[in-house]
Amino acid sequence: MTRWCIPLALAALAACATSASAHISVSPEQAVLRESTEFTITVPAEGGLTTNAVRVFFPSQVSVYAVADAPGWTTRVLKKPDGRLRGAEWTGGLIPPNQYATFTVLGTPFEEGTSVWRSEQGLTNGKTKKWTGAPETGDEAAPETGPDAPGPAWAVQVVATPTAAGGGGSSGGAVWLGVVGIALGVLALVGVGLVWSSRPAELPPDGPEDGPGR
Image (cartoon, rainbow, N blue to C red):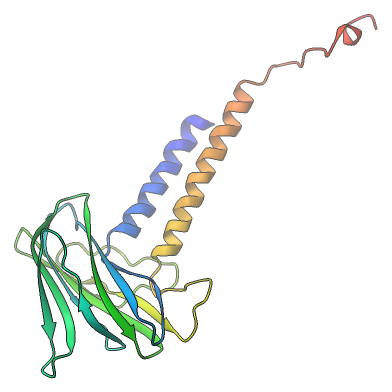
């Protein structure tokens, strides 16, 4: 049993991990109204290509007032005509395949609802992967679109009071819970297989009085 169930489970695990890690994401997935928050933007390498630029556009519901420098990158703040921050751009660094980088900003949400964080990812092949499409909803991940077509933007829910569920607009958290569940299932199956494979055909007697002739 263990010979065939492990490869199948690991394949499902890899599929879930690919879906969860392929998008630019923003955490936390839930922010509290009028509470200063550090937002972390996680940028994984896209489609086996190297990333050399990241541009993020701030949602209208969040007033971002500070952008952190990232080691190895040049930071440029994008402003509106009135001087308010509308986005940030990081260039000059590299995110090789199978790696990721994080960028942080400080902001205060001032309107309840879904705030959409749109972004763009510059690639060393000269193309730009846009994450400007409709955010994922529920537990269903959007199909992968490759480096040429826009992918889903990331959504952060702004709530009046925090909740234990922390329901973000994107399904990354739910996907990773599923990944953990699959991994635990694999371990359980392996354990059962080992127990049955080592189980003796007949239990030995507990003592002399249990033997034949009692």
